[in-house]
Image (cartoon, rainbow, N blue to C red):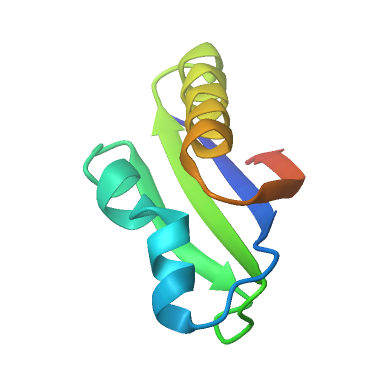
Length: 93
C-alpha cells in the first residue's frame, strides 16, 4: 500500500462570502471524494474568504498509481476552480 498527502493552497481574490467561496471551489469534496482511493477535506482557512487549503489523502497499490492520481487531482483543480493555486505540497508516506 502506497499513500500520499497532497495539500493545495488556493487564493480566491474578491471573494465576498462563504457561500461564494463554496461556489468558487466547485464542490471538490463531492467530485474527488467519490473515488474510493481518495479522501478529501478543507484542511485550513475555513473562515477566510479569500483563501482555501485542501488536503487529499491518496492510496494505491503502487507509487506510480498514487503519483498519477495526485497529478490528475492537481490538473483538475487548476482547471476547474475559480481561483489561483498558490502552493502544492505532495508528501509520500
